[in-house]
Image 1 (cartoon, rainbow, N blue to C red):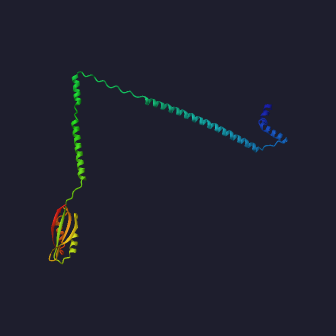
Image 2: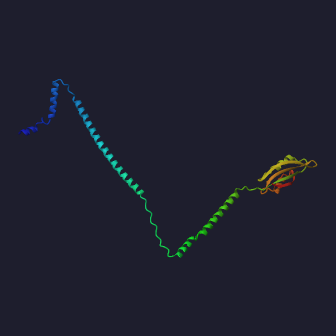
Length: 242
């Protein structure tokens, strides 16, 4: 077996670092140098590995941040370019289109005729009629509103009635109570008094106010004479419009 083949089978040279480390610890122990436990060395190597890993991560994060910042700068530059282009477009005012040129009039007579035709308003009469109708309708509406808001006068009359009993023994207080019991819409009883007639007989003279459209004298006389036990007759002593 040659020397190269012997070296290939010899693992000493491949583990030289381990033998060197063992030799160093041997001489340190002979000279009284305290030896660090292997666990501490292993921890230090692990800490160093973690620090290296963190440094690599930080470097990668730093690169990523730089890339993001560069992208943002690029986007901002594009936005500024677009804004500048929009501002330039808004600042440009479009020129007004030239007015169409009309052919000159061949003579003065034609010009006069066209001016006269322009003065004629074919729809003027229709517009004036519509405006007049609108004003008329508005005035009628205002008059109707004022008339509706005006209070309606109710025709009333004051009537003085003479209610006569049968004789002097008739209970006049009960008779008056019967008369006042007559109630209807548009009737309002007023003051009353007893007036001597003769032979100790007194009649009831009572005033009332009625609405002419709702209450008449005939209705009053008919309703009062229904109390035939007390009332002999009913006469209208006075009738006045209010």
